[in-house]
Image (cartoon, rainbow, N blue to C red):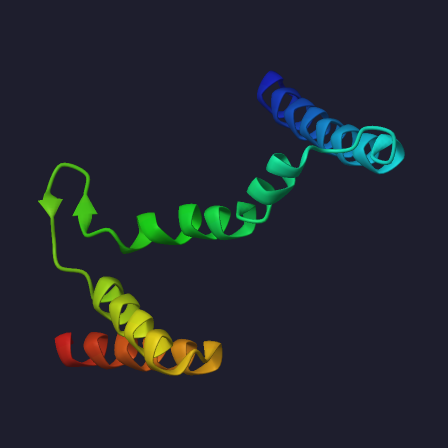
Length: 109
């Protein structure tokens, strides 16, 4: 095993260890260390913030070195947002967004 592989396996092991320690620590000592109400209220928004951080950069129409460019994903995403605001249905958002994406790619080909 060379140095590069050792580094990768060590990083995986250490990140796994950090994850287990932080999760197990909260499970073991969570009852003894209660969170303040302000922190509990703020943590309610964590899943939405994480999802936004993952999804939004993929929709931004910027390419490195090129600046703003047209992207079909942005149009399909905006259509999905409009469908959600009108229907509040997650299934319709997925269907409308995917149909829009496939349709725009088909028209461009």
